[in-house]
Length: 181
Image 1 (cartoon, rainbow, N blue to C red):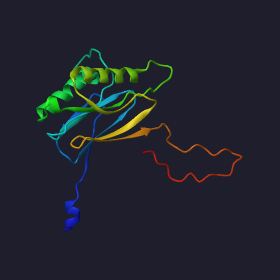
Image 2: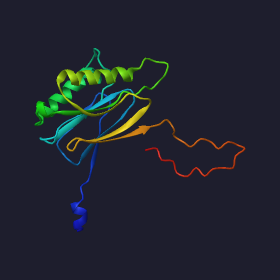
Image 3: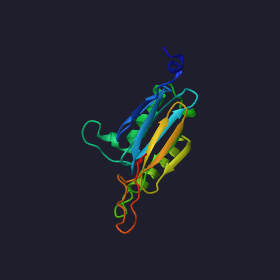
Image 4: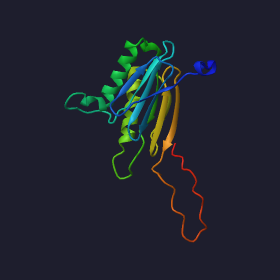
């Protein structure tokens, strides 16, 4: 038995996909998602040590079928707030961080900006302070959030999946390993 290994904590990653949310008070859990024009709200009560993340696709709309409303911001925000409160959080201590809302295509309506505007307006109307945000901009982002501590880590997501070919007249370049994260 290795006592040093027993003292190490094993971080457990929970992916939050579109239309999903997750709430926890487990300090070994990190919530993760990948965002483009979608927005994720990270919400926590720092005193109770409980928090969570949601991931919504569009600001508002009417869904059809079971759980269709989950992809809309109004529903996703209410669901996350209520579940954090049910898990022991208090409304007067809640704090939020917002991520996403990127502009993904130049030729289409800027859905990301609409999502970001909605999330900021919603939290202002609810009186929940936004203590950190990374909204709008171009492209996607990968997000990791530790709900108990409130730590958030974001990395840009690029479309590059392989090194560009070397131009024929230049000497070859050693491409080496490609790091995508």
